[in-house]
Length: 266
Ligand code: ATP
Ligand code: MG
Image (cartoon, rainbow, N blue to C red; front, side, top):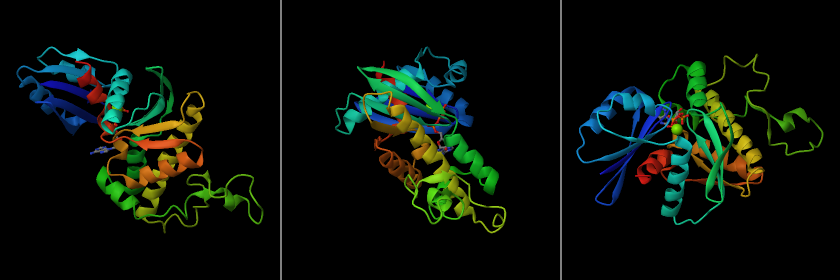
């Protein structure tokens, strides 16, 4: 068996191949010791670990493991998952919306990190929690999908009253920028959560599209667990990316890119 493990800031992603078939699993970072016990109990396995918490994970392991820088692992994994989708792209950006967000340009078979933003999946959970008290990612995403940002986000057209704006009036001028003082007690949990997702989605796509100017391609491949079962975040990112002139692509099983790359390196 070959096993790739990406221990990130929030989730541990595992990819393993057995009898030619690839399996995926993910665990909260709090379950690191259980993941380590599973690895320690495997016989005849080749293992490669990556991600910011891989050093901590390794300290629980009794087996010898290879280690890889997460950006290289992600690059390798994205290449493999793209091929699986029947695509043969060789130049693109990768935006990994994990706990934080990291943006990379892939061209000439090498990856270069172009930048990132602290607005990511951690922001989605953290800000949602502060505003609503909720803690469960799936519940946050489910409720957000029924919310409207209409009363909370300030659009360009709201500022350009009675006058044609020089850019699309539908663009967000200010996330959470409406005059909220008078309506703050009326706002629903759904509205607040939808607006948090809008803030995260618009920020990661705006930064990605700007980064695309430094890359020969304008295809942006979005990965990371923040997109799991999160149609609203995908929709915000997709429409904002297109509006700003780039081409979005959501990779199937993209959240496992790092784990797949670590596995493929063996
Ligand atoms: P980083 O790469 O920044 O070190 P990571 O690899 O742990 O972090 P991902 O697993 O790609 O990051 O994404 C983490 C985000 O995914 C969380 O911040 C949250 O928004 C979202 N998420 C999806 N499913 C869950 C879950 N079951 N529990 C917690 N967060 C989840
Ligand atoms: Mg990660």
